[in-house]
Image (cartoon, rainbow, N blue to C red; front, side, top):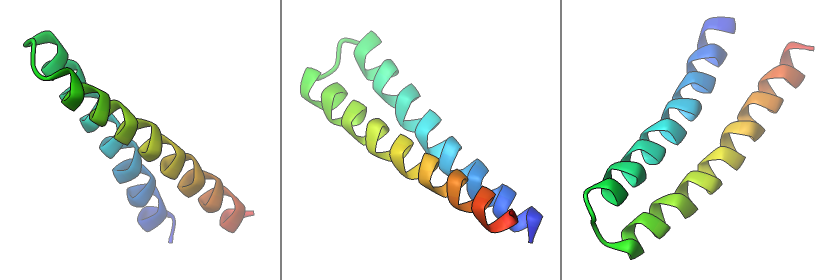
Length: 62
């Protein structure tokens, strides 16, 4: 059970990191500001989701 929940938490945090890096790369390359803004909005949403996942895991573990 712990291994599965650790994996889920790691995937949630990894998704946040991937979107953050994608937004940063787009910004550094001089890409579309709209895409950077959209990626940052996705990052905020994924951070919220990741926090909920981690809180849920901690709650389940007691």
